Length: 288
Image (cartoon, rainbow, N blue to C red; front, side, top):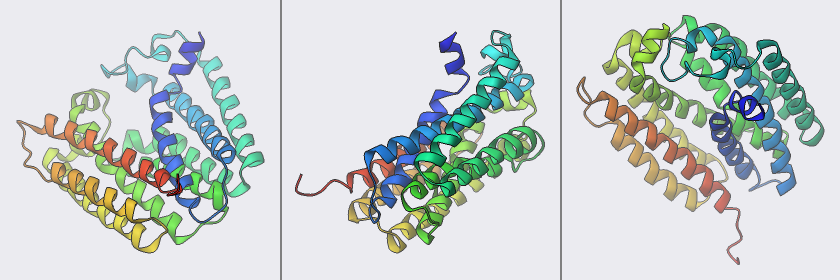
């Protein structure tokens, strides 16, 4: 039973978001005092709130999940977890995460995380995901909150650098999400979810993905020029941005779009892992 309740929190999504939370924390820690315990509190609070949002998503999306081969075996779809119990579980997670952030980080971080929760649960899950091709864009806003939360947990103020970080992860979400939609396009069609590749076709989606990757590259460079990143970040960012651009700008057609989109998706993971890691590595004193 514990394993079942854990599964509806979508641990993979939580882990991915915690990586970006750590990236924001590491970036802020370059100029502000921070401790490992603060990092633990911030990541734990963010994880609990995200888990709550994922449970609500699972509850609300049961009708969609039944139509998709990837999700039709989820426990809530199969009725193996009581809906009311799952909802109570989500509320407990939300209250616990909110309290932890408020008491151990600061009110600003708490508010930003709750705004991200509202965007994910109400605007994305309950509205735009089902009705608009812009659902992915709305989802990218909530997806970019964790790194901002990690940053604000340290600084307790919004700076131009934090806004660049937020923009960076918003832009990263778009080609990452469109790539998933492309290699799982049949599932999205069956569920009636109006993602861009389904609504406008793979060529239009590719054009958007190339534009977003180019914009991501510009913001990644801007974060170095205007922020407090070091040469290590610049080198790593240059390499992974080049690699992601190279993959995304490759020729794509109806014969190879699935393989192409999987490559773009895998490279997007390399990008976020690399940037998050180098921001942490930059904090290690050279004397060590």
